[in-house]
Amino acid sequence: MKLVIDGYAGAGTISMGGYDYHDGSRATGETRNFNAGQMIGAVLEYASRKGTPVMIQIMSDGSLASNSMVDTSTAGRNKLGWQGDNSSVAATLFLVFSPKGRPVLRNGVAGQQIGYFSSDGSVVSSSSPAANSINQIPELIMLNYMGLAGTDAQFPTLFPMQGLGPAASLAAMTVFQPII
Image (cartoon, rainbow, N blue to C red; front, side, top):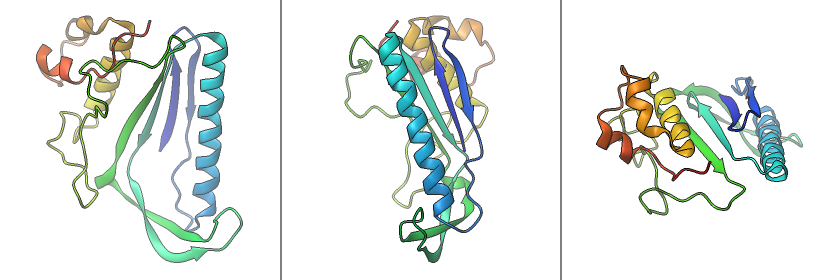
């Protein structure tokens, strides 16, 4: 998994890798997740103090299965250890902060989400154009990044080979009103 934090107003990009937990413990994952949470919190605090909007993207190439062994270390916190990847539950998400207040959803639905999982936890590959297409995830993120800047109408022109679909489909996948 990789954590990418990107600030709109020239703040730059932070990329944190090394979030695959293949050592059979829980402690490694708990510690790295805590550190990622601290980094996200620091970026949000910085954006707030600078009065700068920020978009934070988190990508996962899958989840982990438990090895049914309890990690009794302090960092493992008596939780089951992790081992092995499960790519059928990969996901990406983005968080948005605006110093002007809570970002407004374009369609007004409180839980707007692009794509979804089935009851067994697997990605429903037909739930969005990007659900089963690794090359369309960056397109979807870029579309929403441009939407935050109010430039999403330019997306089909700037990316004529994009695979997300026509303008109506793009509009349905652009989550927030502009915050810039």
